[in-house]
Length: 232
Ligand code: AMP
Image 1 (spheres, protein in one colour):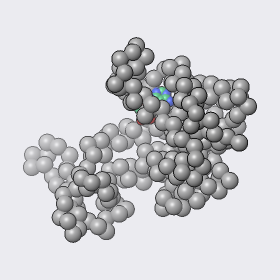
Image 2 (tube, rainbow, N blue to C red):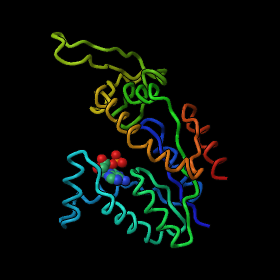
Image 3 (cartoon, rainbow, N blue to C red):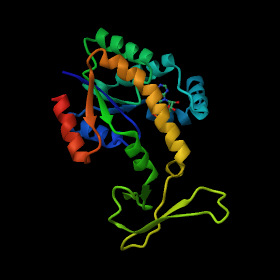
Image 4 (cartoon, helix red, strand yellow):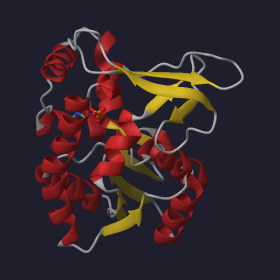
């Protein structure tokens, strides 16, 4: 039997980690439409150029193009046992198209897993995240044990928002903060956009009894276990 899972969650809910878990546990590939579109960056054809333009503007790619790209991905050999969708569907139209596409093949969406996280925690997971050059991450709110110190430093003329300075214990390495995490406005905007675009989809799938809510405010392992129970 094939397994088609839709994974949803606000940024910071741990979608990436859980997609990896599902992929390894159930042997189905992770299909992120954002990744598929980004992979078109090096292509010169009309479709790829149009997608690049739309992404740069921050808008959504139109449903027809998105569905076409998904259809192509689903036809590949590694996707025959199902997939985990991430970032797709983004609109009720895409959802309806996916359902009918799968139904034509005798398949269906098995579950819509919503990684449930309160928005304040989601904000702190992004805003408080710092990492080493090698990619080890800490969070000043949740995971500060390995930090020698952290503090917010005011710009002398208050021209910029305070800067987060964090140093790793032991190595003394000054930690890095992603530019998009350092900008509180940008984080709030991403969260707002998530809520605005996801709610209609949650309503759509709730009406079909497909949405399974998993508490994302627990350890990665505990969330994985809960997901396994849902899929099981
Ligand atoms: P993401 O990495 O999921 O945030 O996607 C990056 C960008 O790709 C989005 O801002 C959209 O422009 C585009 N995109 C990704 N998935 C979709 C989708 N399902 N429908 C429309 N546009 C999408």
